[in-house]
Length: 165
Image (cartoon, rainbow, N blue to C red):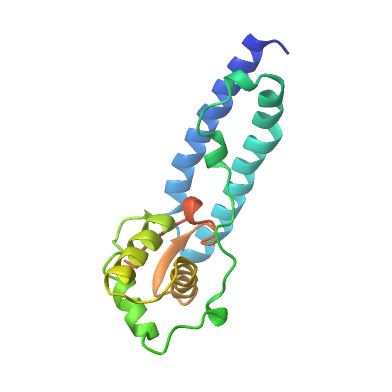
């Protein structure tokens, strides 16, 4: 493959990535069970596009790599589970929920955004709660159908949450 061919292939793959993002938004409108099933499959396709198609092109032609490609690869931000979280005695689950729920909206927001905003609120209130504990709480709220989540919520920059309809 020459450089011109590589550029052309990359353009088509990036167009497919945009189309898959549109599909992700359509999947967000499905019921929870279907949403989780299809969203997981969609992330596998996106990961394959990036790792199996774009990565070899960029290995051969590093100068054509899009500047944000590394940030697009889905990575796990935290593996902490709610049952592993030990809140300080001064903070209850209800306190944490009282910080999280006002941040959530009916429209989808990146999990990372909600974690960061909740962390900032905790700091402003001088509550010793970390970002991973907040993310673990979002996961348990989603798992218990108190909020909606799409994607693997452990991947903060590649998942989204919202209030239930």
